[in-house]
Image (cartoon, rainbow, N blue to C red):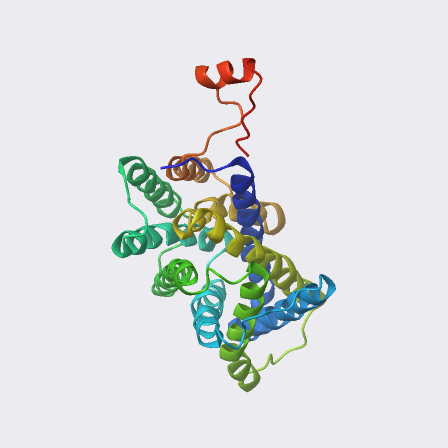
Amino acid sequence: MTAMRHKDFAALVTLAALWGASFLLIRIAVPAFGPIGLMAGRVLVSALLLAIGLRVTGRRPLGLRANARHLLVLGLVNAALPFTLVAASELHLNASLAAVLIATSPLFSALLSARAGQERIDRRRAAGLLLGVMGVAVLVGWSPMALTVTTILCIAATLAAAASYAYAGEYTARHLSSMPSPTIAFGQQLGAAAWLVGPALVSPPSAPISSSALWALFGLAALCTSAAYLLYFHLIARIGPMRTNSVTYLIPLFGILWGALFLGEPMTPQMLLGLGLILSSVLQVNAVRLPFRRPRASAITLAGAGATECTN
């Protein structure tokens, strides 16, 4: 198993920070817009921003019509369905717990990749996945929320969203790997809008929308969708769907951090223990070579002879 390059790992962490913030923004905005209305607004604004970006950079979204069916499916499984499930769950779950539950996505992704024969789960990767499961179990087991019927249904909805994200990564690698990342990101939002706009028009918000909810919607669309999906599809092309989906191990770190900073949600020692296990699992699954790691003797010998080695 080859090690991930430092710049790819940095992109993975940035993606986790953006998607971790999405749980905070959803928690702020979903009571005002409702789950479907909020997500319809999210994908529409994101599609508009991506279209502007393509035009400014002089890129044409080639292949949209030829891949319309695949983009419609991707819009469902990577946006419309999981977005709405998470938003509906956050009417009752706090942002931190929702972010933690999405960390199960790499488990579904690993199973899908192994079944398709795309990536082998060796002992090191299996140990890393198990470590991630332990971290999630620690976090959920010490959650401050009571496990009512409503809470259990919301947890199930979030887990279904995690499975949908995992399938979307495999679907992208299988059917859309030849398309540029900006085109896939734009096409996905159009596909998601096709699923969401109609239902959103049937049930519009019944009360005036606050400025904080509007700003949360814009941040959700601009940063957590447009910018994040450009990174996401770039990483799938660079490091594969299984490694890219391991970003969801890092999302709880940022989900809990943003929730504690901006919503006053609890950050307990048990949460930090669970996050430590999860972060360790990310390094294990991706075989990341840390920048401060001692160089091998062979590398030192080459450097002394005038050769250089670029690892990132």
